[in-house]
Amino acid sequence: MFQKELFQQDLFRIGDKIVSPGKIQDMVKKIFMLRSQGLSQQEVANSLHLDRSFISRLESIGELRKGKKIALIGFPLENKGEIRKIADESGIDFIWLMDEKERWEMVKEKSALDFFDEVMETITALQQYDTIIMISSLKWKKLAEALLTGQILFIELGISPITENCFLSPQEFKQVLAKVDLLQGVQVEKEGG
Image 1: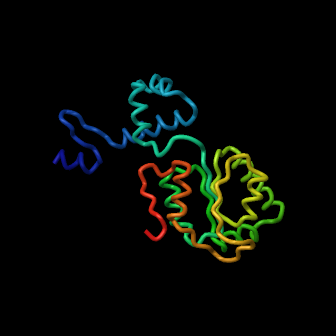
Image 2 (image 1 turned 30 degrees about the vertical axis):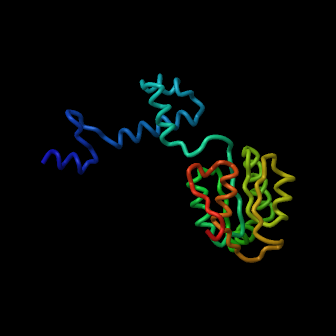
Image 3 (image 1 turned 180 degrees about the vertical axis):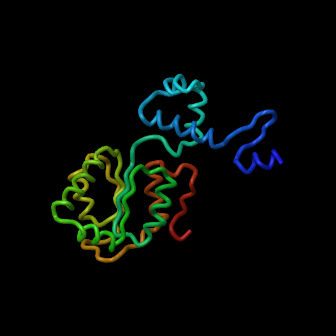
């Protein structure tokens, strides 16, 4: 009976110990929160009475990628859900994908001043990214190059003005991600293969 109750509460008996995965999860979240606030591994270890090597191992287990901060902007995308899934799995830091309807709703639902403010806030936020992957028409690439300081990787969806959703080949997208080493261990097939 006691074993059954332990299992129902997500507790596990391991030898003479009762272990709570929830308690472990809370501690891991606390570790990552402190690390993301800029504390060193040693500072976190000292404050939580842990070994620094334990924190290092946790980070290695959860690491998706190392390196630069990467943003993804794309519109108007027919298969934005599929592209978002690939981007999420690749660890892209900022993702903003829209279809044609969402793009026009964003413009129509705001006053000119509110729209301009939102665009300027987005441009300001994008300044912190080292690489921006842009999926759009050439017109938007030129604008991004003029306004942003990071490297722009561009995937052209069509000639401006684009008035319909466009399909982006997931393989083409993966090939661009491979250029910035985001697909560690992911097979990138050639088109048609």
